[in-house]
Length: 236
Image 1: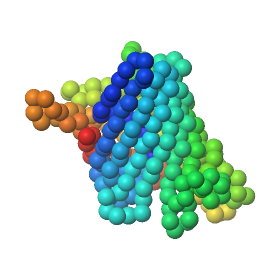
Image 2 (image 1 turned 180 degrees about the vertical axis):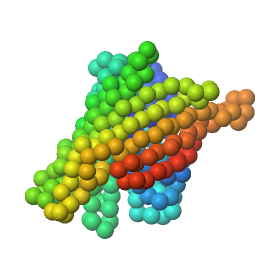
Image 3 (image 1 turned 120 degrees about the horizontal axis):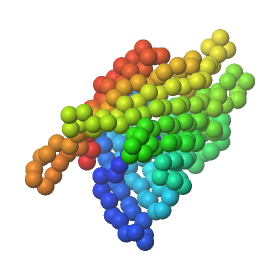
Image 4 (image 1 turned 90 degrees about the vertical axis):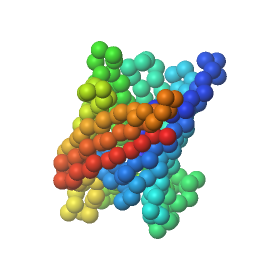
């Protein structure tokens, strides 16, 4: 699902804003402690920034021919450097459920999930990130009476450097509870708890005098699901 990633290529003019493009290849697509697709995935992105507004699209596509795919749109407002507000339209086409029609925004049939998030991005002296996000429309988990669960996710992140490797530590929590006796299933899990705990290390591998290849490895634990992932990725 959508992540605000640094773009690998840039074209910038102060008066016209800046464009960026990226493409990652990951051994598994794991997002907020949840695995999506049981194969490596290609994840392209493109974004435009001007002033306090950034808008872009991001996707993930399994490489084994499986049905799982995703295409997201997002807009981020950064009124001050340390804070940002993001609205994301996640889209998950699913032919088996008839939700592969992109322009179908019917709340009961759509393949879209709308999310709003607010983030404290930290400062140079305090590299601590705090984010809270909630699904407010679309294919969110539902209660037995048909109402949205308004699935919520909160995350703490801390950035540091260890032996010339940039490291991001993260801890993600969901407070939602599903009533399994009534047949409810949560978006992130069926009970409140920590669902995303781990560390990501980033490093640039020098291929030649003029070219370096950014790579990253993530150790991700989902305590609630009793699951663990070790993901490798590279950026093009």
